Amino acid sequence: MNKETSRKMNRKSTSQKRSTHRWDSRFSTMALMAFVASAGVAVASNDAPWGYSGKKGPKSWGHLNEAYRLCERGTDQSPIDLRDAAPGEGDKLRFEYFPSPLSVWHNGHTIQVDVEKGSSFQNGRGRFELKQFHFHTPSEHTRDGKSFPLEIHLVHSNAEGALAVVGILVELGKRHPALDAVFENMPAKPGKKNVEGLFLNARALLPRKGGYDFYPGSLTTPPCSEGVSWHVLKTPLEISKQQLDAFRKVFKMNARPVQPLRDRVLREM
Ligand SMILES: [Zn+2]
View 1 (cartoon, helix red, strand yellow):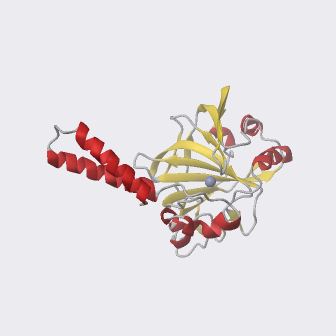
View 2 (spheres, rainbow, N blue to C red):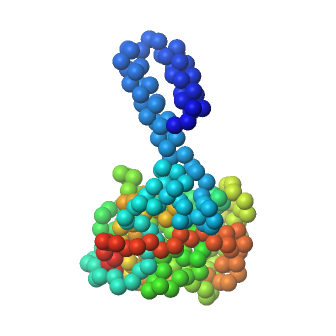
View 3 (spheres, rainbow, N blue to C red):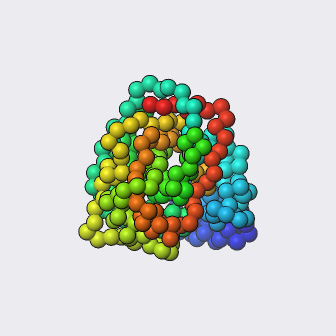
């Protein structure tokens, strides 16, 4: 915590005492402690700037901020090279995705599409609600060492806040009509952009068939939090060269390199 923060907190605690003078003093102390704790968290998870190249690139993420230390010291990090998967049993993914009003924004690190409440998927561990999807170029996961031009991450969370991501590797081929709505409405600079009257069903991004690779991993961006269930689909999605170029006009490169698998087991379903 820096001096400025503690000064602000002192100021706040004085005004808090003044406005809450009728409180039981024990409660007031507890409230203040709760405030200090939450302020501490806010400081620790302060968004230190990071990027994909140079001094703030992936190799330095773990040093940029105490809150990012897992990027350096974590043992279950993502992405990974998908190879030699052990056979897994069952656990078919069941998707219940519905059309959602399109909200496309540039968050400084990727183009993110926020999804309205109501879409979800189920794996063997339960139901996870779709929150957003976003893009990386080139792909973050590789398959047998092979990189793809783009990767889509569909980010879900369950009632306990556990994260489950469905990764889709993207190759060049036919234009993907459903993605035009996204690629034609990408803000060039950080900031939000809502597209009125357009709806997108994330279901359009899913292949008709094919299994997936499963492994326990992490966020691929700071703070690199672990405990994320990864499901990378076997069947790649196709987009056109024009669509890829449109994305690369906004982001030339926004992919973290592959991380060691260590003791984890990659399973194919
Ligand atoms: Zn991602």
